[in-house]
Image (cartoon, rainbow, N blue to C red; front, side):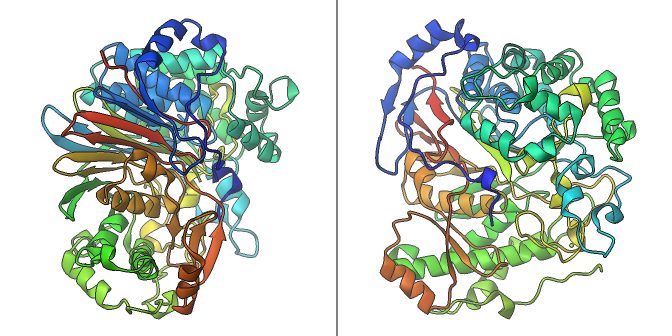
Length: 589
């Protein structure tokens, strides 16, 4: 079910030193002093990942260099938003298999001074010339190559516009300052992670189709090695253009012309007008109460927040703690099943589609869904009303930040599947996404993550494709959490499970380490992560109830920050499945 490159290593690293390369030489004395003051709790062999605790700032991201970029920006006087810009752009350089300037993001921001929560929509959008014919074979079947590989697979990127918007409206530093760490990484280089090296090797056939992709990812004609230095001068130049001109440095002028020229030469349909018309959008987040906690999560074009809210509303009156494990899993899965059915049916870009959000988010609607759950039997997806198909409708990253003043950012960024489209847009160095596959390009046919959509998520010029990204806040009286993860359609159930774990009292390390369960309506099966501690008799009971159990490889790469406000302690943890991540806190001064 899952793209192999999307699955993270299950290694459980102890807290470890920064890589030894020239990028960090200037920073090493300050870093060493900071590390000396950390309170670090390491767990070598159990299921709890390394975590760090502080009374000041905390960042958890998927790459140690990106986390350090965030702290460097905080040290320059920046806030959580400035740090998020530094982390996001550094990940574009060091983790291009998961996100980048050629992709998009969804982010929640909490402004401590005003108490305001807001949502930044920098999701990619379809070019105006999009045509279903480009994604069909001669026999009318879906063409998976054009929807996943090359320039036709790429939507107009949203990340540069969103970061520039955040810097201007919510940051404390000029955009150019927050971009410095990423520019330095691109120019001076870094040791590539094992995940990046493996991703390049696995996608070699696609990358070698395009000269600029070959030049970027196969310097000297061969794939990079973890022991070598990987540089990205093309992307460094594009970042410098953004530092000088803001979003216009990407969407207008020489960079834009170079990208459009490269896309058209390779058979794509982008125009300069497509780039110039892109705008990041600020939207109201979804908010609900569950078990005495306020949940703040992503609205459309994310499907995740609606689905999470629907699942929590279904479970709200159910005492899960009093149930045996089999029945607890039963109710979790049935809530997932119903939420994903509605996900497939109703959701899309709010600027193009009228969605019945009041209904989907209503506790009264959830009451009706709950009544359809049989207490001791699986509800086959085929028994539920089918998803209407009106027309003949994973690789990502997440990071969480809380600064010393209580400002928070939960950002999930993506290029879709591993290394996106595999197409680098000429000398810009920008690796383009393959998010067009997240549209229902061919109605009734599944995308790369097995999701089926109808007309609500059909591709239209200027429209944003539906996303599973679900950056979230969970706010209680004395504790709060910043939560999110990559993982395609599994993002939604990962965040759902993390919210329940936090409310149950688990800390950041326990939340990121817990074994995962997933159901998405179709295919009608329950994916349970290999190595889970679910007893054999519980699995047997679930099968007796009628569930098909799939023993799935690990998925996701969760990064969580928890703030115990009663003790003013922040804890950051990165997924133990990812050996490159770092949940880190600022030194206590």
